[in-house]
Length: 269
Ligand code: SKM
Image 1 (tube, protein in one colour):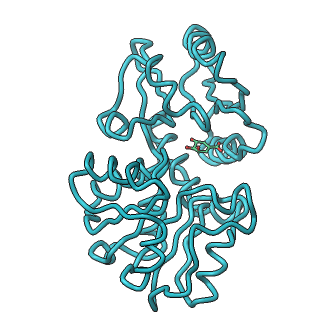
Image 2 (cartoon, rainbow, N blue to C red):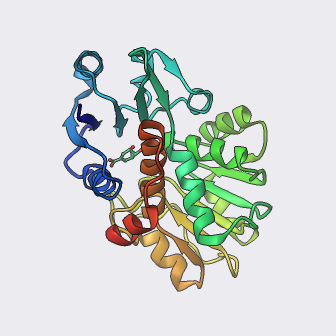
């Protein structure tokens, strides 16, 4: 029987997940379909129940449901539990639903694909303290990056993540901008660049030489933050790698096969 998968979100029309997964089904000769489904917050519980009843093999979860979906699932992977967010649901053999988070690890894979694995000791500045930053912070620590500072407009939110992580420190965006020269890796997780093409969390005037600067936004590919960093001579990591790798890890959970990430990154870059 044909397997089917989905991505749920509000809005959902912009998602490139259906195109990406269909590319991999063709490549790996998988008899499967992947559909975008528009689910609003007030219908989330009904949507989960319906998909469970209809026998869907699994689905991705995007904004704004990553946290809200948790009470409707039967089980949570340990990492997803720590992160408090789910972006991948797997229907298990007994029909129960298990939630995973593949965003954080997707980011780490993308970063290491771009710059290798020898940068773990450099001081890393994570900008933002929302759901995406939380997932990335846990995945970074699990992958051996412990020299982490989380900068956020509301320092208490950054402090709360640091407390859960058990390592690192928190500061304000202003402080981060002032101390910028001390950081070797910057990871931009706020929506600056997504909603307002000219917004920047802070100026990159004091960016260190040879810094690595990553953004998690993949549309547009070059955010104002990355453009400014590139002008300063930094190594740039766009959000495309994270998007493709989170999808590939989800694919592995669902179908136990490793899809071709390089071909996909080249396709949407
Ligand atoms: O975490 C991912 C999600 O799995 C799929 C997605 C999309 O289709 O745009 C974006 C991210 O939230």
